[in-house]
Length: 247
Image 1 (cartoon, rainbow, N blue to C red):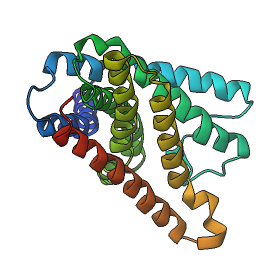
Image 2: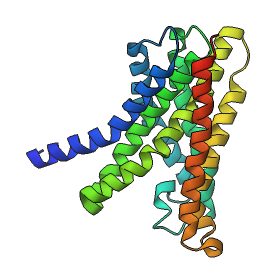
Image 3: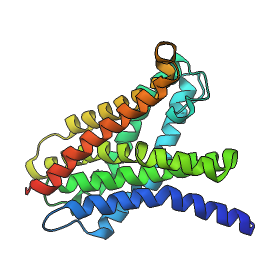
Image 4: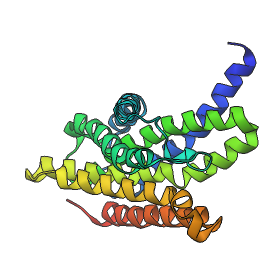
């Protein structure tokens, strides 16, 4: 590896991981009273970035193979003509697989939780780690194809959409896991809600392809607006729980 390659990797790594770590710092700062320990949060973040991201990629590739169709992720829909199988992968397979593996990270470190709202922060940590690795892969591709301008444009868009989606969706599952530990209730309904939120986000992200014939070029912008609106609503709910819920 030459010096230019090292600079490229460092730049993309910084752009990909900095927003996720900043979002985790922000969410933890909202918590009133005793806060979650950084060592356990960073372990959960690392699980999402490494174990969950790799596991999801392998499972989705296997699912795509069995569906006899190349895997097409939501970010590629702007340039490719997706098939029905691709939409099944994006809207059904990816949310189920990704939310399940991210929740495993929260479950693994649930021993560090002492109240239900801890699950919101631990869930966000796992989701943000996962998002950071996704960002690194997508943004490095953008940089190689279009240079720094393409990298920055994609990084800004993903920081306010996909990154926060992964954080907020897995926070819901994490909250269920923490409640299960505290009260003995089932956490599966919360995982189902996380999957549904993820699926809804992916539908909005695919809006430009689904409804381009109806709304023309505006379809992509409409989808982006609705996807960000969905994330904002869930984040406001999470914020209210972190600031006002003392269990």
